[in-house]
Image (cartoon, rainbow, N blue to C red; front, side, top):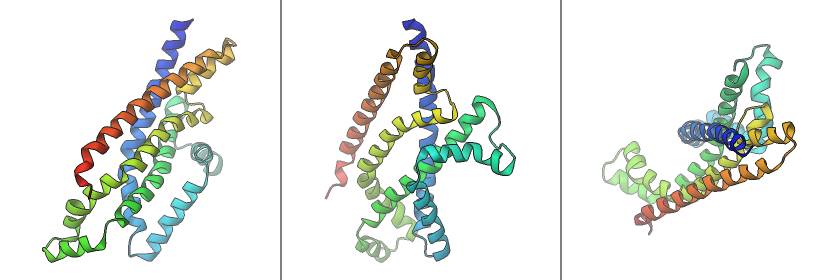
Length: 219
């Protein structure tokens, strides 16, 4: 029994890792784009993006998963995601990327706006373009300042992946819960906690090292 439980949990954990990795790959660059859009001088674009961010941040991720997965089929009569496990997985990734991109965008915006305006003015005096100032001066300092809040959101993402079971995606918690339903045992659920703790612990160590590597930006 223990071997079969461990095997099922490992398979579920791999799915959790897939959700985690693909969410970061999509949400970080999208979050930066949303951030730049929310700071745009084009007022209509700025307010539309901020409204979207407000809606996403103000509603539960579980609700967003349900709407994104079931919405196209129930409202438009067309299931965009396809059927089966693959369709649920694609819908999950889409929901997680949109959700976390909005949270990351606010972290990016706070980091960018925390940089003194005088540094931009000094860059212009030195003959640098706006893009050169952003990538050579601003962005490097922003990275240092946003590591703590970003690490907190990323560790939260590890645990939020469990919400994907609401649309029957077979991730780690789903695997542990299946034994409770089929065999009437609860201890596999406690082992899922070990997976989450170990993964979160590794990420905590990683981000602590990254913070130390960026200490040379401290003023």
